[in-house]
Structures are given as C-alpha cells and as structure tokens.
Length: 201
Image (cartoon, rainbow, N blue to C red; front, side, top):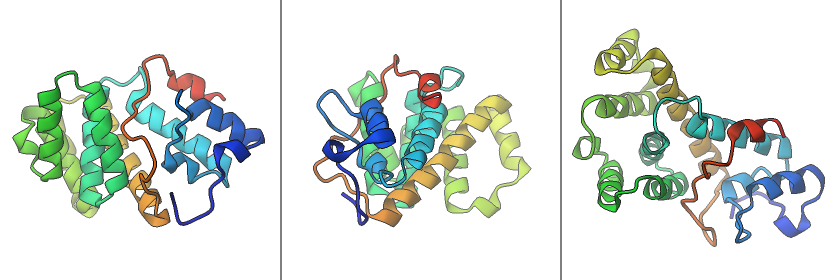
C-alpha cells in the first residue's frame, strides 16, 4: 500500500475514524493516497479539502471532467502511475461518451493531447505541460495566451490550481510508494458530496 505505516479502517479511532467514515465507499474501500495520511489525520483533512475544492467545487466554471483530464495529464507527465490510474478512471466516470473518454485517456497517455483536444482546451493542456515540466519557463505571455484562447482569469486560476495540486499529490504518492494494489480506482465524488461540507468538518 505504501512504504510507511498506515492505520487500517478497523483500527482507526478518534479523528482518524471520523475522517475515514467520510471517505470510505459503500463497499468499504479507502483510497490509499488518503490512508497514507493516517498517522497525521490533520493532513488528510487538508488534502481532501483542497482536492474537493480544486476539482469539484460548485464555484468552479470549468467542468470537472476537464479538470480531471488536466490532472490526469499532469500525472502522466510526472510518471505517477497511481494518480494516472485513478484520474483516468474519473474521466471515464464523468465523460458520458465512452469513445470520447477512450480518446482523451489514450491521447494523454501518449503525451499527445492534440489528438483529443483543440482550441482553448488544448491551450490549457499546453500550459499544464509547461508548468509541470518547466515551471521556470512560465511568463505572463502564457497567461495572455490563455486569455486569448478564451479563458477568464478565474478559469485560468482554476487550471493553475489543478496543475499545482497534482504536483503535490504526485510527489506525495511517489515519495511514499503508494500503490493501487488491492484498491478500487477511478471513483469520482458524487454531485451530492459538497466540498463546503467537507471543509467544515
């Protein structure tokens, strides 16, 4: 599951048990990335809060399927197989057209987003690639290009936050050896799973 000790659900108590109860699936599954926080439940809470706010908050303008696609692409670029598997799964959950989902995941896995995206969506993928692989190369011109592609500044912030969040998540997973072994992948939060409610736990 990971290279450090984790606390299984059946042994969790107190704050950890409370948080586990919020994220456990009806089938009793817990994402290993969250279990890796189990020795420090406060960081689990912080991680889940930013994840939900960045990808699933109702205040976002960009659709969750596209934000998940950006995150999956960042994970591919970082070589994070754990997050790639999970967020490709989320793309399949959120994109109603299976062929479209296959096209997206295939293009991103091949580091060829132009095969599945064009226009403003492709511009966002280009920004995600540059910020992930060569962050020092980013200049104000990159932001200007996103505006010219049709994004508002608020939407540019959403894109930036997704790319930045996945840099954190990928490095956490890869640095602790978190694996998908014996884990269900690709579960996306339901529409009723309100990020604001999580944030105030």
